[in-house]
Image 1 (tube, helix red, strand yellow):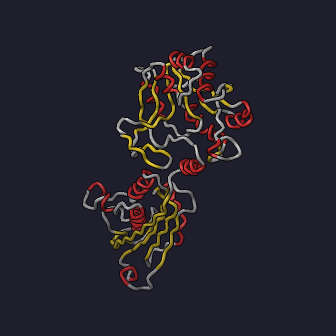
Image 2 (cartoon, rainbow, N blue to C red):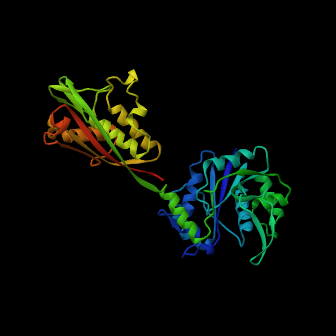
Image 3 (cartoon, helix red, strand yellow):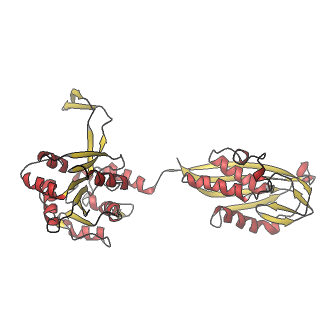
Amino acid sequence: MRIAVLIMAAGKGTRAGGAHPKQYRKIAGQAVLRHTLNRFCHHPRIGRIQVIINPDDEGLYRDAVAGLPVASPIPGGNSRQESVRLGLEALASDPPDLVLIHDAARPFTGTATIDGVIAALSEADGAIAAIPMTDTVKMSQGTNIIRGIARDGLWRAQTPQGFRFPAILDAHRRAIGLDLTDDAAVAGHAGLQVRLIQANENNFKITHEEDFVRAERMLAGPEMLTRLGMGYDVHRFETGSAVILCGVEIPYHKKLAGHSDADVGLHALTDAILGAIAQGDIGQHFSPSDPQWKGAPSRIFLEHAGKLVRSMGGEITNLDVTLICEAPRIGPHRILMQQRIEQILGLPPGRVSVKATTTEGLGFAGRSEGIAAQAVASVSAPK
């Protein structure tokens, strides 16, 4: 099937304010029209895209679409209905099988919505994106309510609105002189069958100034929340030849006892990250009674915590771990420890701090009975 798209960008967009029509105002550094076109330029089934513009805006149009694979613009008419008809007439010399008609000021149309409209055209003359009414609807006279209107069966029409090309071209030709609200109304006037395809609230039309604020927020991504977590771990010494701390093996006349490799530094870091994202502690994810983790390298636990952060759309912004012991000496290995943690979590340099301290001979650490570690993790994640 040959599929073409007409993007309606001939309006003046005065309700949105600003020095230029709303389709040429910028959000996230690019014109609204460009954001809209990107939704269709990257769709694998769409072969031709043309934009209907006001001839007075040709300079703005050229700047907005520079480098995009769109055909030459088509001058619009005195109304949206006339502009659509002129666009359809321009396609008629090399007619597509299907045509989608879309508002330039709807820059957040999803691929699923586009696919749904196209799929429906295998069984119907037309299909439109729409949302079922959920709010109570009132009819008014001025500011006074006259009566309520049952919302059952009511939908809010959006675009894209898709049609079999010959049918919608004929319908528009027959509707010349009428003042119909959208292409579905033109199709309905001609007796065409039009399906409703449920879209979503993100496919809103930029109309007022506050819509630009909403659009900027959407393009900026989800609002992020800084979350902090704290971890603490301790392991006693036993006879051995090396200790593993923060992923680094340090020669020593003892080793740390534990079910895994007893890396007290990575254990504390893992718990700190899990705490920051409210995912319990290391024992809930890797039971110390499970034989598969006997002798396991603790990087597995830290990697798992990092993956959980990424799966929720978050990012580890900072890690700080303090090793508490009399010996072995940590200083000569501190930089390598930081690099090993960065490597395990895929973090850039400067996100990890490793420090060491003693207890001035007090307590189990002061008596060289074991090593403790405490850690703090800072995570940025969507609210």
